[in-house]
Amino acid sequence: MPVDLVRDVIQHNYSSILLFLFLIVFVATNRTFSRSVIWHFLSASFFVILLTFSDNCRFYSAKLSSPDFVRYISAAAGYALRPTILLFLSLISRRNSKSSILKLIIPGAVNTAISFISIPSGIMFSFTPENKFIHGPLGYLCHLCCLYYMIYIMVHLLRQFKSNKIECLVISVIMFSAAIAATLEHIFKFDLILAQTIGVGIVFYFLLLNVQVYKRDTLTQLLNRRCFYLDLSRLKNRKVILLSMDLNNLKKINDSFGHAAGDVAITTTVDCMLKVFYKCAKVYRTGGDEFMAVFKKLNIDQAQKKVDEFTKLLSNTEFRVACGLAEFNPGDNFEKVISLSDAEMYRHKKFLKEMEE
Image (cartoon, rainbow, N blue to C red; front, side, top):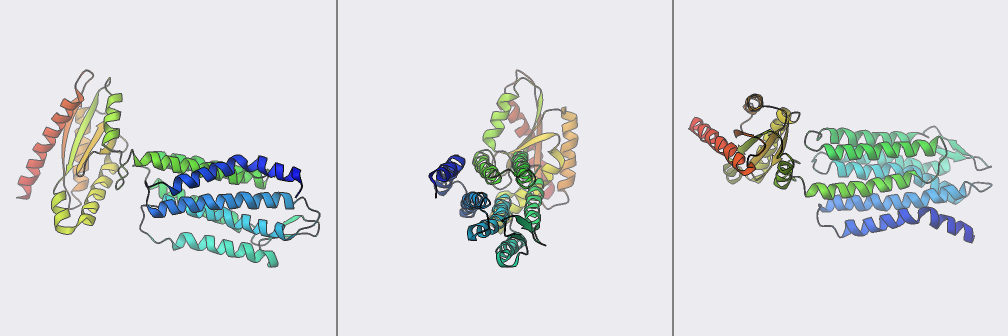
């Protein structure tokens, strides 16, 4: 291979390959996520490196006077790898889901098989003797497969939008950037930018999830106790309403039916909280069965109406939550106001227990 060609390859890809080598080392030594999430990040990173390599082979083999073996293999690999990377991003986005992954694996597997079958058949792509690219009958299968994964990722994240807006926003930016890069490559004949765009997106996604681990409760995806107090420190100069909430009988549910049943109780009540409070308050999980909500734009009477709405919605389930409101004004001590809301909550908790008896 000529020295100038080697120089060009290194110059065009050095930073992106180095970035991914660092990411692979970071992910491999990370103990924050489950093994499956780590494996999916490692796989996505590895396939981006392969895509970068195949795109380089495709770019330089396209300059030949006639198609060679590298030209065919790199084209097939490029068609196969793009949806495969999005497949692993889809698996990461649904990391808390227990549904079957077959509907994710099958489209990618079919696309990969057809991509390599196209080398002898031309069903997806072929080349003229002059090395010009020709779309086959299934030439846009890869693009449709990528679109399927992108829609899946966005739909899945939108379902969690009430509790985790940041991840949805970041993934939207990554998907939009990848779509622009794909358009530039396909229509305007830009080279070697899609793999780099996806690579940078994966790095930022991994960093985002690392940050989220320290900000959010794993089960409910609500902000945690630390974030609650950090947010309060920023609100000391404005009037807000604090709502203390406590899930009744969680310990009894855990002891009698197991922690899986306790998790169902928590997630069910949190779903009700988010349905009622997500537009008017920020909700936090501050303990095992303890939650707080902060109303910034409502007065205490309006907040009470929302609490009544929440209680009514929760009455359709078998679970009960004790609630207590208190008003914070600039100059007040937050700890004292939290104690007041807790006191109201305990009075409500006592009332609920008396009703059960």
